[in-house]
Length: 363
Image (tube, rainbow, N blue to C red; front, side):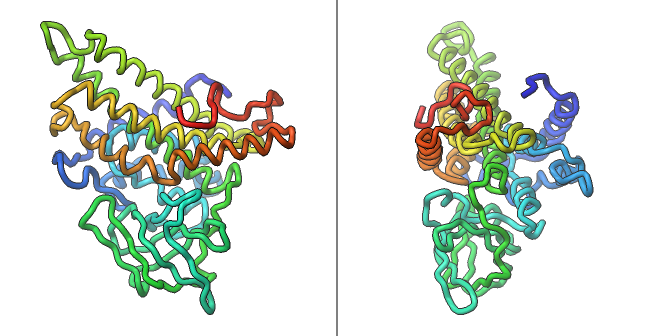
């Protein structure tokens, strides 16, 4: 893995950060902190940069690989904006509708979420799940059939489908909603380079961006706010937690981009890297945002700093694509199984297979 920054990625990051800074933010402390979904306000920025083509093969896109998609997701989180990228990227990976929103992915890998009961000619979906977008368009719904996660496309107006947009994130409910085999978009298996692994890495990058953005906001405020005739960030009680948060962000960034690099360049050695990166990023986002809120004190919940958006986003997004504890258990079980078989899951032959220094389990 080449640790030298790619000049193209540097330019894309600068363009994204500049453009996203001009997207209006929701200043209110209460209510939904962002407008999410495929048609959210960040959609214009991504369309202007052609982000939808970043990961597509050279035949119809730019073939920049998953690393470019991870970069886009990170910048969306850094700007504390809604994620209008992940649904389209997952749809492109699975061949689903390009304008669809996602629902039910927070139940993976072990939760119940939406259940799919067999019926004549297909299944009936029942349950409640968080949705990306309250718009009445097509939903890509994660459910389980025969114990395996499957992605269904549920069209607008399907019987028994309803969306509650009075809360955030919006909630979609299904009551015996019929689906058929023709509605199956893809099976979300744990293939190291499959659609689910790629989606997990994009989500990990989004959480990484949330943590990094909150940390930068806290550092800026601590550098100008004075207490006891000195800057806040010069006080050990503030400086040390912020320094530890910076270390956590950098370690998480290494895990996320290592996972993306493995998918792009060494798929046979990807192993548990996507699961570990997502679990690590979810914990980092929650811990770092909490530290940043504490460092800024009562000012953290004001519209000027915008930390409340990072706080709400971290709480809502950390459980998407699987709860961290369940992901750590999945990674640990995979490593234990590999050890029993005497294998190696990253192709290095060193018996590791996780991010350097990473150990399956809560930090």
